[in-house]
Structure formats: C-alpha cells, structure tokens
Amino acid sequence: RVDRRQRQMCIRDRHQIKELRQEFMKADMTVKPGRLIVLSGPGGVGKSTVAKKLREADDFWVSVSATTRKPRVNEIHGRDYFFVSEEEFSSMIANDEFLEWAEFAGNKYGTPQKQVEDELRQGRNVLLEIEIAGAKQVKQHLPQSQLVFLEPPSWEELVARLEGRGTDGAERRAERLALAQEELAAAAFFDVVVVNDQVESVVRKLIELAQN
Ligand code: ADP
Ligand code: 5GP
View 1 (cartoon, rainbow, N blue to C red):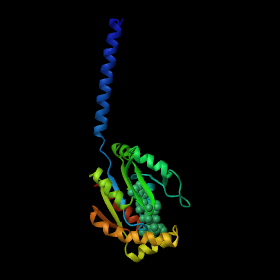
View 2 (view 1 turned 90 degrees about the vertical axis):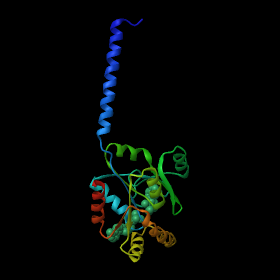
View 3 (view 1 turned 180 degrees about the vertical axis):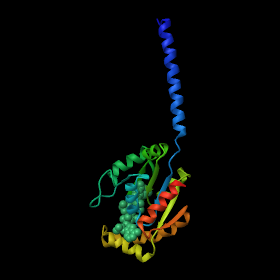
View 4 (view 1 turned 30 degrees about the horizontal axis):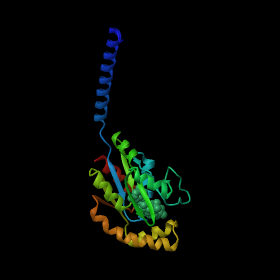
C-alpha cells in the first residue's frame, strides 16, 4: 500500500523530472546546429591535404570514413580511416550506419552517420572529404549541406600531383587519371568551386563558408 507521504514524493519527483526535461529541450533548441561542408573533387587534387590542415585548425570536426581499402604507409586506423573488411562494410550497410557510401577505384568508402549528426546537433561544423557520388547522396539526405568542388589549377598540375604522391603503381595511377577526367565534369553540380592553388587559401575559404 502506498501511503500519503510516498504519494506526495512521487508527485514531486514527477514534477522535477518534467522540469528537467523541459530545461533539456530548451538547452537543445538554443544550440545553433553546425554547418556541414562536403569537400569533393578529382582524386589527387589535394582533398585529404586540405582536410588534414582543417583537422589541425579546429574549426571543423573532420569525419573519419570507413573503407575496405588497405592502409597506406603512415595511415592510422581511426585517424585517417576505419579500415574494415568487406564483411564488416556490408554489415554496416545492412545496419543503416552510413550517411552515404560509394565504390571508388575498386574499394568501398562510407561516412558513418551517427557521429556526424551528433556533432552537428552540438553546434560543431563538420567536414566530409568524400568522392563525388557520395557528395550527391549527402545533398539528397541533407539539403542544407554545402557541396564544395576542389579543382586543380590545371590538368597538368593534377597529373603531377598524382605522380608526386607516389602512393599508386603505374596501372593504378592510369586508372585514377581516367576517373579524374570524368570527375572534373561534375563541378557544375556543386554549390561552390574552389581552385586548390594554395592549401592555406583553400582552408581559409572553407572556414569562411562555414561562418556565413
Ligand atoms: P586527394 O586527397 O584529393 O586524392 P591528396 O591530398 O592526396 O589528394 O594530394 C595529392 C598530392 O598533391 C599530394 O602529394 C599533396 O601533397 C599534393 N598537393 C595537395 N595540395 C597541393 C597544393 N595546393 N599545391 C601543391 N601540391 C599539393
Ligand atoms: P583514397 O583511397 O585516395 O584515400 O580515397 C579515394 C577517394 O575516396 C577520394 O576521392 C576520397 O575523397 C573518397 N572517400 C573517402 N572517404 C569517403 C567516404 O566516406 N565516402 C565516399 N563516398 N568517398 C570517400
């Protein structure tokens, strides 16, 4: 049997819970959501170089993708990518864990959804550095996202950067160049086009975009 005193305490607890919930809702609504910037462009143009600089600058939370590609020298699991097996990637798709995913040069890449949403909700700007098909998917799901296309100063410079990076064999490089030619045509779909002549100036432009 519940006596009078216990009943009063229950009512008081319920009141407190209700008040706390209202406070929490208010707090959540007052946080202005962060901006979602999607950086894309042809392979070798300098996307990951720019993303790395932005990670240091602290204006953005830079998303870490999952991929089935093997790690390159100097790449670290959890920092550069989550390197997963085909099976793990498939189960992430099945569990609806990706905001977007795509296949690129024989490997799969995807953006884990949850942390992107959490960071945006908490008011942090988020940067995704992804290829073009994925960028289009993000725009469909989140139309408020800003798609930025990074362009090389010239085709010759793009070839030089891919060769200079030295991460691919001749055959892989030829494949990536053929793909890059197709990718360059996608600029028209993007909200903003930025030429990557100087990494620092691209970084400044992206920070400005997130602030506007
Ligand atoms: P992506 O991620 O678009 O495939 P990377 O960031 O790996 O491209 O860059 C490809 C190569 O180009 C790297 O060797 C990088 O150091 C170089 N690079 C990037 N940005 C510039 C720039 N503004 N000027 C000269 N070289 C650059
Ligand atoms: P790389 O193998 O050179 O690291 O990346 C190859 C391509 O995959 C790049 O164009 C890179 O931007 C893209 N990429 C990296 N992560 C993702 C992702 O999560 N989703 C998509 N769609 N592309 C990604």
